[in-house]
Image (cartoon, rainbow, N blue to C red; front, side, top):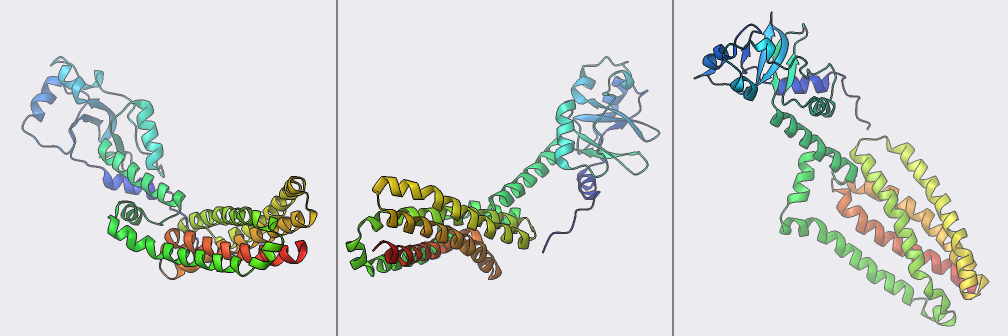
Length: 326
């Protein structure tokens, strides 16, 4: 199911909730000496910048180091940064952080609906939120998990748990490799008659795996991002057929001029077309099936799809090539 659209004020609300109002707040007419004296013995959540307000409206921010260096009779209006970075409605953490960096300011100011000063988002809080967003983006782009917490768990889990999650799928792949050997061995007599056919088995298998892997990656990314997969699947199926055709056409002259056997070249080209098209079909089905049963498709789809694609591509190649070339 496609994720519902984000509320335009969701990011503003989240950052506002992260703000602290327990910061030094003074008037523009206060002097630096008065402010320093007033702050002694008081506890604040954030003191690296002082909020300067007038009638509750934010006038500017004053860095603590600048306050400490100022003459005692200096008024805050002469010392403050007059254009503080204030969170705008619907603004994302990333956009706010970029504005802070451009203005070389340390804290993000928050105001209420009437423009009154409501607090500051400390730099460490904003950085923490950016790191969380970054982790989530990487998890979604990598396509291996849908949530940040799960992504961290998968990336940081101990060796024993890694083996428990991944080894069973690899053992399935090992069984598939054994079946591949048995499958090729069952055509031993035909391959002995036309040894040249055996030369192209790795090429057919590799191309099917490559096409399938591309589709799996795209599909898992889409699943983790809650994209409507119906259109993606249709487009990938069409793409697989087109890519198989182009790969077969490109490989045909190489096999023909390299080995001088037109029948073998034709057989390999047809096998490449069919195996690439089928690899896309397999790659669109398996990740969704694995995810449906509650497993992480990144662990299972790769090994399982690889061995299914290998078996299919070998079977298709031999089924096409042997009648044509022998």
